[in-house]
Amino acid sequence: MVNIRYRAQETVKEVGAKVMASRQFQEADLQTHHHFTTVARHSFRVACICFCICHFLYVVFKIKTNWQLLIVCALLHDIGIIGRDLKYRNNSQCCQQHPKDSVVVAQSILGDLDDTGRDIIGNHMWPMTLTPPQTIEGFIITIADKYCAVTDLLPMNNRSRLINPSFG
Image (cartoon, rainbow, N blue to C red; front, top):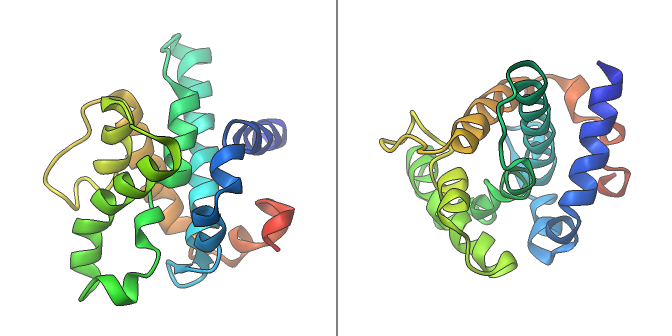
């Protein structure tokens, strides 16, 4: 288990280097999220969980996924939340609107996203929003995001040593 956790963190850092170096992602580490963490830390954890799920699906069931795109999109899935107190009237509006805002910010960082990328980021809040994901990667991030949202409430998951030392 420790080996896959370390491998996931290192893979996310490598695959997501461009995103993590962006000004927007650095700002995301200043935006509180789920009361006890930040958007960047939460997104990093979601990306690691996505990698682990993809690894499991391939090793056990030989199901192939676009795990590289999923990692990049997981790092950006909540990037639209930055400035939430100025952008959204309440949590309900934030839940509905931030996936759309995140797609726009992601495109400003990466360029045009393909349909899978837009699905991953734009539908990750299902079932809180009406449109379910249309891809396996979209379902994976939905599961990983909900798992991380719950476990973000645990203090042990918010230590900077578990994420990226540069976040500390």
